Length: 143
Image 1 (cartoon, one colour):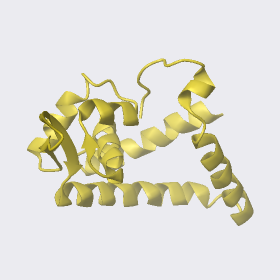
Image 2 (spheres, rainbow, N blue to C red):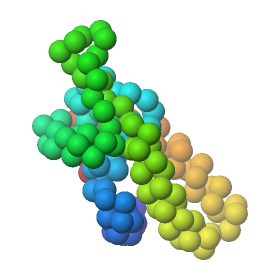
Image 3 (cartoon, helix red, strand yellow):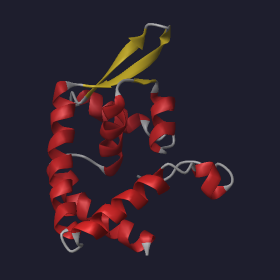
């Protein structure tokens, strides 16, 4: 039940992301950087479940559009720290608000108690590590 629903929700997000000029991976990057600057694209890729070599064009595009910045890492001048720009934060927030409006429409079908139960269940399940679920690291996961 989860996989078909997830695919449907992602399909519902695509036109919203397109409206904001974002791909699913670009949105995942902007959300990933919400926690603060990331020490390098490899770290960010791991955090969002992306392949570190395939994420480079996404980062290049976001940087060229002024949505993220790459700064030298003070601890290692050869490395780069990735961070959201104010413009990137605004685009991310607008896309996120539009997505949440669609989610709200779907969730309105549930009673208040069912919504709380669903949220609590998702919180618990999201804390289980990938390794614990899968048993080994199978590489990147789709956003």
